[in-house]
Image (cartoon, rainbow, N blue to C red; front, side):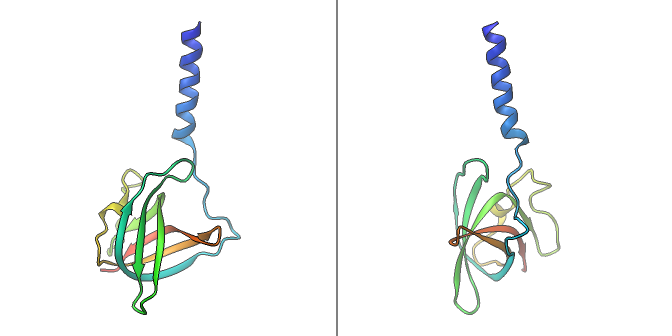
Length: 123
């Protein structure tokens, strides 16, 4: 009986993470766009519920630098519009290279953290 109870608890715990949807941008959050060249990319390991996987530094032509956090839910497309995440199966941001020009749609969380909603390659 104990084994059955433990198995049910384990299944419930695992299914929570399998079916949990990270919160999306709220209607009150302003979505902004930033265009520039990738300066650096740092891989990170996130925690639920957002699962942050990376941090980009992007430099605009004007010299302004911004940092963007890439989530598992971030949509990444190449210049032709092809989905680089293959429907959410892969982390498309990992295929981007330093020096590529990109357009980032993002929202600012807690007044200091820019979370990328979508990234589009321009080259």
